[in-house]
Length: 288
Image (cartoon, rainbow, N blue to C red; front, top):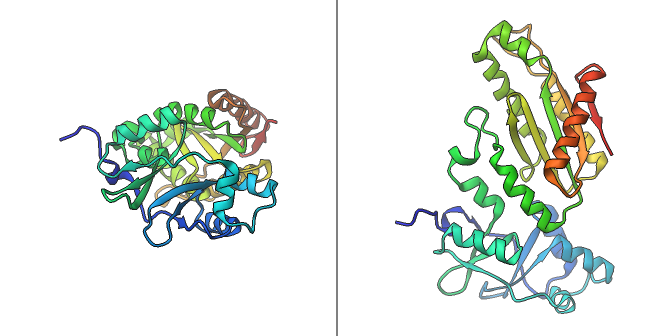
């Protein structure tokens, strides 16, 4: 048996598809409705994959005033390369190798007949790999190993519309000293739950260390990032504990825009978080 999972074990089945004669506007609507960053173009009756339309392609369509043009015309205009696919019986290692060699993030998955059966992304692989490797056992959040993968991915994609939140529990040592580490662990689990409930499924929530949590917000502007940060702060402040009703927890949050280097951005968000501590805690501070 192979030591690496097969693609079919981690892929997302029934990916969002569209035929080449549909309009670009229709593709945009499908991306927005399903909250995805791409749709796969397939032959109308055979479901054999032909190409893929991403957010970047949509921007090109807007520039060329092609929103109401068939997707086939946009593919021709952009001279998009032949679609790269992977077989469902290939291994996840094969998928990672293709991601690295081709500098891509989406791989349509085909069966033996060449028919589309799914799609696999780096995010799917991260979520599907053994929990002990990438998931913090206490909180269920991603752990710091995820940062290495994300750092390289973001550099390849030259992402800009991304913000980092650095979150730290105020006076957490006092909670541990007063109520014990078992209760402190419960606080961290509840904190993780509220943060996850405040962000989107495709954002990354990472336990950075101790009571520090890093949130990576994808496809947001400054206003949206600040709104999410404030939402997290308010939700955390509303947490109550039945066994210790007198306990209220707050967080200080630093917000920083992506600079092109994820670790550097995290450092800047951390610095903003410390400024939030200095102005009184339970607040959000951003850096430009």
